[in-house]
Image (cartoon, rainbow, N blue to C red; front, side, top):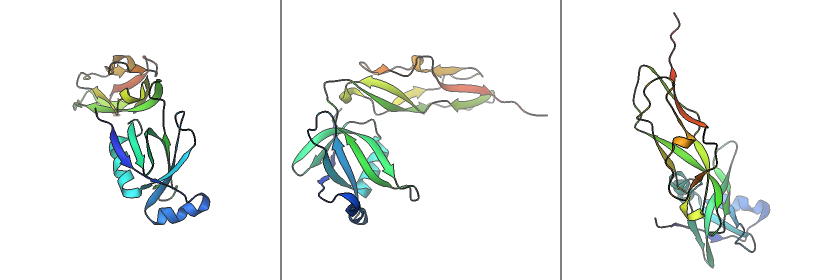
Length: 185
């Protein structure tokens, strides 16, 4: 799988002056991590970032490129405005690509069937895994077609993970369950 690229600009505007950046359609951010000697202040285009983040999420490794440099990064944290719910700051984490890291990876349910015997309940939406940064999956697909009766469940230990990816979340942890439907009379 090819590593995606995302453009950024090195930022000289710091402190409270970043409001000007936001008005200009940019989101301030920083690049930091064990392979970065000094924190790099950057800014990214608001619209491009929102589209990219919806598609890539926080567990995708990608190259962040600016004028005089680039770094392979994860999106560690996106701070949102509490009223507008829009991103106002981004932390990009640059891991050591030769050392395993832990990350929360979203679960995506597939092949859901309608059953009158119960209701499909999703107990977790993501699990923690450990792997080299380049092998951390963007998402983990969960096939729920085998769940038919109340009490049928899928646990972390039932997942088929890519090679070299280890689940840190307990193997007995419940992910998806068919719960019985009770009708009051």
